[in-house]
Amino acid sequence: MTLNIQEFWAKETRHHLEIADKTISTLGKGVEDWVDMAVACIEAGGKILFCGNGGSAADAQHIAAELSVKLCQDRKPIAALCLSLDPSAMTACANDYGYDKVFSRQVAALGRSGDLLVGITTSGNSKNIIEAIETAKEKSIKVVVLTGDSGGKVAPMADLALKIPCADSTARIQEMHILLGHIFCGALEQRLGLI
Image (tube, rainbow, N blue to C red; front, side, top):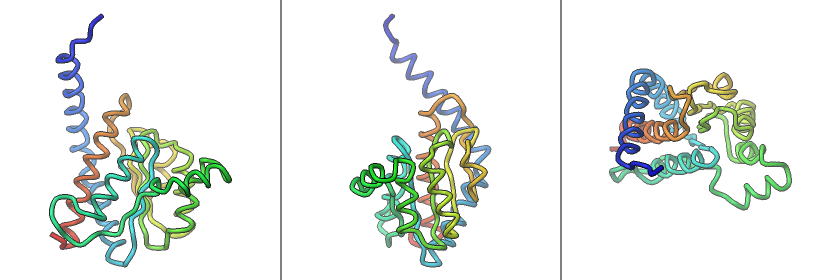
């Protein structure tokens, strides 16, 4: 059977728009709360730490870069970093302590009370994100998680869980995560008076 690309494109795009509409109607207050938490963190001299695996690591890196460099307009940088960007630290930790510790060891080393940890996991069950949250809580670091519909194990652990209303497509969840990330960055820039 030959795939009809135009039909596939239309079906996938309609599904994206359906999930985007559900996200708009359910997560507006959550995004506002996320921005409020980030403003409090940055104004107190803290930083935002991001972590995720696979595509979520790419999203974490992307959002952290938008903050530390810029989203659209020139402005002062916002203190943000992605914990999956240091392959030496990650592979040393994975080799010596196990992959479940690759983020928690970095949170222990780099995180300070008043910082904000953002864990991105479509399932909500990534063990290394769970351990990073546990370490963050020990250090009085607030936690936001971006997850799929169920929220998995991380949602009840977090100070704020932004659960994308989709249970059947990792792609749609990730698309909404990056949409939330861009909206978060733009709102944070404005709330901090940087643009």
